[in-house]
Image 1 (cartoon, rainbow, N blue to C red):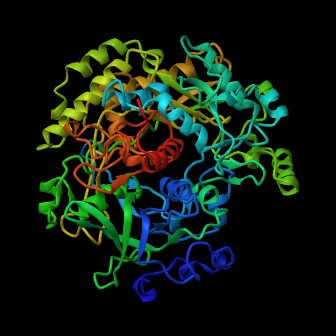
Image 2: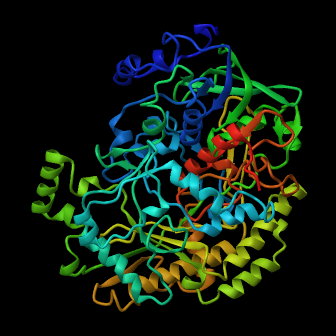
Length: 634
């Protein structure tokens, strides 16, 4: 048995509020004290994917799994509170403190890199938006491998269904808000819930209906149908308790198995390799918040009899590979790390959704669309009622997270020049927009992605535009769903083992990003200012301002205000062919290494046009089947 002194065991290091509950329900540590020397599988990362895979692999009661998590196991109210949707992200103790390198195309601004640092990972702190994306998002993944790939919409849909327990909205709210849904796209067996609030502001429905005033916009019947459009979507929430539903509540709390172990507050130092075979994992106590790593910390090494599964997320999975000697040789050499497997794609192909800081307001939401979310703040009668019904039975506006309605639109719908921009993207020298010296295989993969996007720009199967509707006078989040620029996440060469990796979004590196985002702003102007459905609502533009009209002016606005992240880091261990810069194959096995897989957002070759959490659950469900049963037969 591994010595207790060699690690910080979760049960002994929980906060007082969390420890008593989990000591009583301890199924994680034998006797609550020690981990074993060997397990069938060792999973690095107790987040969205890691806990899902651990739950599935241990279902037989025999297969042994250890999950190693950097963060704590917590019952903090900030993690479970639904109202507003951002309480988890606002609690800094559960977030990694990472800053990007200065962004040269954003006036050298430094960007916060947010990711969950707690059991449950980012599913514990995200905005609870349960979005799936379009069918073409997933068919695109398979296209990089050829027509026989099982990574397609059809191949993933069963896992989307398995991943979540869909509970329809209440009948009265469905009728009054005109909510549509189709249960054929959902499952009802998972411990992770997709639920609905018990209240919707009439203004949200009115703002959704207002999209009918713009040509080409479709109202989709269900958010899980795989088509672009304007639609209602559920919340990662258990509707019975009206608390956040996430990987911990769905794949850990009620799983009482002696073969499923978890150690928290532990930092993985490397994947142990015997030649090019993964045989285990070494880890140390995680440093205290804000403190550097301790090079003298005691090391625990645990053997994996079958496989090591890396599920540390889009930011940290490439770092773990690189410090283990797996990655681009020139990156590892610069950091003084011995290269065991030269794998050029590790840490490359970094993507995130871009948030555009355009701002619009409605001065006069019609009385027929009231109350609005603004009224909750300004109308004391409404506010008092909201507090009363919440206290009485956890219903009303406080059951709303960030909202349940948004537009997810294709590029031909929002822009009259989709064909031209498609041609411009096709004609680019794509490699010239990547970092100097990028490996030719990574450049080839980038070109394949850009050609796929060039096609998508002219059809109505991929959503590029996202506007979240929140039922208030101010505009909601405005997001570019498919940025063309690619960044990197590599170890810090000066201190690769005891500092966070260097994160470079390389925002606006591809100049067509600014052009596409400019058209996103222009279309949003139409919705607010040139829409027969909203003509009497007193729409006005706050930013960038009516005088900002040309591509050049909009590009300047973006350089001053764009956030290259909505905290959906992905792509850094891409599932693509090796000759296209891939890191893992279609079974999520790392190229050149035996008994090692990656299962998290880092394997996404391209971002889905959606918040990434639901997709990560589906990836993890599919990965569990790949691990247990192998690839599906053609």
